[in-house]
Structure formats: C-alpha cells, structure tokens
Amino acid sequence: MIQNWKDVKIIPEFCDQGVDCYRLTGGDFLNEYYIISEAETRKLMNHPEVVGYEVYASLLTATSQMLYFLKKRHMITTANILSILRGALNYPLEESCFREHIRVHDISFLSSERVFENGEMTGLEIKYNKLTMVPESTLMIGDIIASGETLVTCPRSVTDFHREHGERLRNIVLFTIGGTRGIELLEKLTEEIRGYWPEFEGFITVYYEGVFSCYEPGDKGVSGINRALIDFYWKDGIIAPAFRRETLSMRDPLFEKCTIYDGGARRYEISEHIAEVLEFWEGILERADIIDKKALLEEKLGHSLDISYEDWVKDCHYELLDEEECRWLYSEERGFIEGLETVTLREIAEKRISEFTAALREYMI
View 1 (cartoon, rainbow, N blue to C red):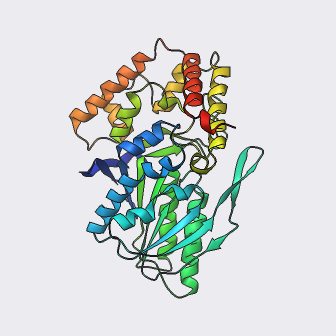
View 2: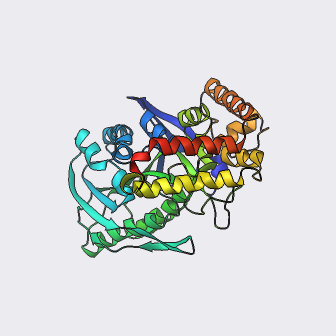
View 3: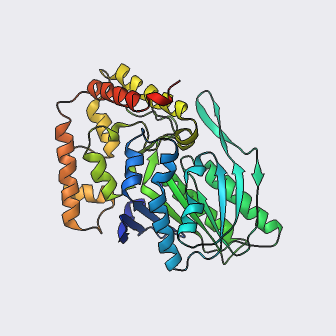
C-alpha cells in the first residue's frame, strides 16, 4: 500500500470538451498523478462488448484533451513515443499529438509479453526492441499497469539507452488504465532516475476513470475466480465520480471480472477476450448458489454496505469535492444496493452470458 494513501484526495483540475480531470493531492508525491473521465472511456470500461478498433477510438478524446492541458502548461515540448507492442497499441498517443500540434520526433518499440506458469503470471519477456534517442525530450507511454512489471522494465530500457549515449530525458508522460501499484513503482523509479539525472522532472501519470486496485497474490476474490496482479476492481482505489455514477446507474458492470480485461486481446485477439469474459460469467453461474452476494458486493464497492456518509467520503477520497455531488453519489449507491436485494447472481450471470454472446457472436469461432 502507498504510504499515507488514506491522506490522498482528488481535487478538480479542469472540465473541458466533456473531459473531467482530477489531480491527486495530499500524498507528498515526487510525481504528478491525474484521473480523467470521459463518456467513451466510461463506456469502454463498463462494457467488455467494446472491442477491436473501438477500444483505440474510445481513448482518443480524453487523451487529446489531456495533452492539450499539458501542452498549455509547457510540460511537453519535444516528444518521443515508446510503443510497447500489443496492449499499448490501444493508446492513441501519436494521433493525439498530431491533433494538439505536439511534434513527435520519433517512436521507439519494445515487445512485452506476460509469462505464465500454472495459471499464474511469473514475469515478462522482451523479444524485440527498436529504441531511438531524442535528448531532453518527453517520453510518452501508454500501457495498462497491473503488476507493474512492464512499467519498470520498459522505461528503464529507454533511460539506459539514453545514458549509454550520454543524453537524458526531460520527463515521462504515462497514460494508463491501471492501479495503485503503479504509483508505488513510479515513485521508486523517479527516485532511481534522479540518482543519475538530478534535473529529471519525473512522471506525469494520467489514469483513465480511476486509480484501481489489483487482487493480491493468493486472493481469488469472493467469487474464487479472480486472478492476482491482473484483475482490477475498486477496493482501495480512487474512482472518478462520473465513472462511479455511470457504473451504479446500471446493474451489472460492477460485477465484471475486471474493469478492462486484457487490453491486447480486446483489440487484436477478440475471440480470446470473448472466451475470458464467458469463462468468468459461466463460473459465476456455476457458483451462484454458494457465493455470498453481500460479501461480493462489498468487495466490488470496496466498503461495507452500511457505511456512513462521512466514512464513505473518506473511503472514496472525495473530501475536496462538491458536497452536493458527493451526497448525490452516496444516495445513488444506496439505491443501487437496495435494487439488488431481489436479484440473484444467477439471474445476473445468465443475462450477461446472453447479452455478451449476442453482441459479439460475429467474432466467435
């Protein structure tokens, strides 16, 4: 857990072109951390039916607007994009830079594949790299941060490459659908980099829709199905208010196995993504009569169902937000909980299997 995480709060930074941006404050961080929320990213993360090119397109508006904000603050001048092959190709960094008139001098490439043993991830394997050097530039990265292995391995490859040539980077901008583990690793990585580049400005990390959490090793969740260091959920994270509101305005998205699932599979190997989603919901259906629904709901919300408003605001890290908005969100959560009282997990699972199969039948083999 991040040191003093309970003291971290989110504060509104801007609201423009349909994009809400919040900054994390109160954590005594070396780096800057933001959360952005927009209609298409909310749709992407609430509906695993969004696949293929639409995954990429869903991130375009939010990414472009954030780059516009960073450009106005003179935090980006010359850009070098690090493209981590597969899942990172979902992030529209080059197109967003083009839209916002940010010059991209070059693009570096690295492959990064998960290695599994007995169903558990044991590390990463880099089989290909083509690195370029742009001195005093901003390195831009887009990637999903779960275990954080890629986060440490890939940027370090680029910084080592620059050091070998006697050059340095100005800062690193990271766009991510990711979790709290990323903040821990980025703080350590910035401290490491400043050991040889004292002027390094640090990481500017932009989270889409929230800073989520991963299930920890040995924890398969209340359902007994979740995968450690891979599956994202809300508990112990910070969720964008608009994403919380939209998720709780529907019945089923909160119960999905993961907020994003496998980004690479959703874009390029859609049949694999379909198999993963259906395997999860079929597992829920099989276990429906023995899963503790109340415990599962508390796990997904991240706190007890009878939490007071005052404790809820602290748990959500919303102390610096508008009180009227917070009270509305709290009452919406109360209504969501009440609405589930007459619904069984079996009904939810059967409905999701039917919906998902119908929506993506054309991709099924």
